[in-house]
Length: 320
Ligand SMILES: *[C@@H]1O[C@H](CO)[C@@H](O)[C@H](O)[C@H]1NC(C)=O
Ligand SMILES: *[C@@H]1O[C@H](CO)[C@@H](O)[C@H](O)[C@H]1NC(C)=O
Ligand SMILES: *[C@@H]1O[C@H](CO)[C@@H](O)[C@H](O)[C@H]1NC(C)=O
Image (tube, rainbow, N blue to C red; front, side, top):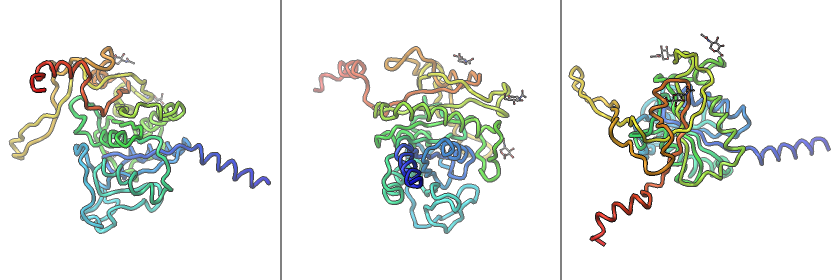
């Protein structure tokens, strides 16, 4: 009798456990994503992690799948070796997968193959991409950021998603760096991720309109900050606005190579025609470095608003 009751309770718990798909661009062996995986599981979610075997930064929404059945070179940090299968799960955890492709391709692999084949085609309630080892200021980088591509590719597939940027430019191997120190940046970020995910999934993620997702940037915390930032506050932001960042290029005379950087376009793109124009830009809050996380709502609806397209049509209207 008691055992039947326990089975019943377990079944109920199973029914109510929400499923999260977790990905990133820094690789499946990175400290940040492993901290997020550990803490989302601890918070009671079913987490399926599928992340690139190698760093994919700057590849944006590029959709690259494995070119052979085995890895042609070692994975990030040498955690899987050349010659291993092009996708597989961690020897220690069968919910953690690597895939030899870009971030968007990892999400597609999860939704189109792995989850139907190995996870009973479970419904994914929310996709999380990141946290990235660096910031994700999207103004000029929306299509450049691979972390963000994990989120927008999920939104294209009708699954709500959040992209997270961190503020450490140091991608480290989780087996070297992940511990339970509450002040470790990875652990601060993962606890804030759980806070936001708990709120969204308790309220019903399905209510998020199906063409939008969230972009979150964490500030410098703990040892990365001179402000002893251990519990950042949240702030509503918008993606465009004063102080837009765009990719730029410089020539390095020593290496004779071109380098990608970023530029501030202070006087361009500061118009706001749609959205909440009173919100500060992600950029302005992120660079205030005051222990504040930015939360922007992005849209994959590339159509301009009615008033904007009307303005364009008034110019090209003779064509029609
Ligand atoms: C990056 O992390 C490693 C491992 O924790 C550390 O040894 C190294 O000093 C860090 N580098 C920077 C630039 O922070
Ligand atoms: C920073 O804050 C944490 C948590 O409040 C505290 O444990 C730690 O001692 C503080 N560190 C410094 C240098 O003030
Ligand atoms: C942080 O800086 C932003 C931008 O200047 C400002 O709007 C916000 O109020 C600040 N937040 C805190 C907690 O000081």
